[in-house]
Image (cartoon, rainbow, N blue to C red; front, side):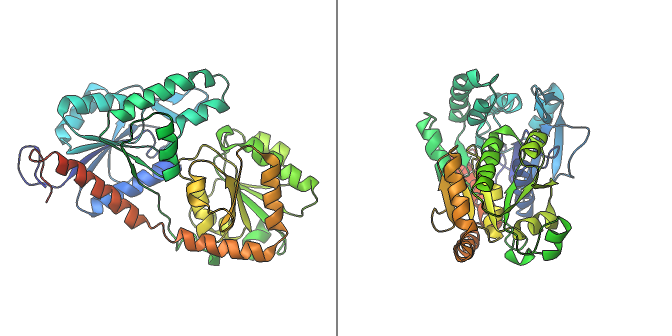
Length: 393
């Protein structure tokens, strides 16, 4: 690759992220994996992200920390109020060939403006359905229209926007966003998340009998994941007389409320690594009623673990779950339909087995190397379009 002055150098990418190491969520882990892949291919990456006094893990790559404050009402998340002069100067010195913005917040907005001034091409990823989140918080829901308008302007100013699922692209087009989308699905470590990780010893440690049917739910315990629907459907299942055990993996502000509604459920808190893989494989089916997913990492992990999935027929999930083959899709928010689908699987071991095997087979098509190589190819396409200013070889 030629640099912006015409000399040969490695590809340089500036990555602007709102969540990179201070919380161990799907977005942060995906971006860290992306940086690791890009560096393995010889690219140079510099990450700009909000700082925290207590990072959740050691990040991959070179990071420039931007001063931030806790998000009001959700202090586990951070907001960078802009891009201070020293941060702007560091970005200019790095002289990136392309800027990748992973969030349309104040930091992303300032980076977008700076990129325009420096004539750096900008691409973005759409990780989170911000406009869908607002309706679950009454004090924020009046801002939905203004946020949608802002997202139109922000993403419309980017060369390309990488969306994790075709269903997400469909929704954004329907909302009137510019159709500059390219598909970037997530991947799965199919060796880590594997049916062979099933453990009777693990179940016993958590008070689960060898023959009990385990319904797993894995997520941040927050309103937008529809914890209300989760609890209502499981309580209805109990009223229907369907024998089962509920396993809740994750933590968050709705933990106490959910535990009060499901007093007999097993709450493990947040898990990762082998413990998380064992939790999935030691369950029998996966229930995920969220309707705000842009992809659904946890659903893919459950599928790779050999679990049939009952999910909301909404963005993300409908691009993963093949209804009637790998699981079932229910109308978002329709408690009785979720309960009926769970009961159908709970009462039919052969159906669970067939759907679980089909889910595992479908998950095998989502390899990380393939999806990361796709992004690198997208970068090269954008830079090739800028030739002769930049030349890709």
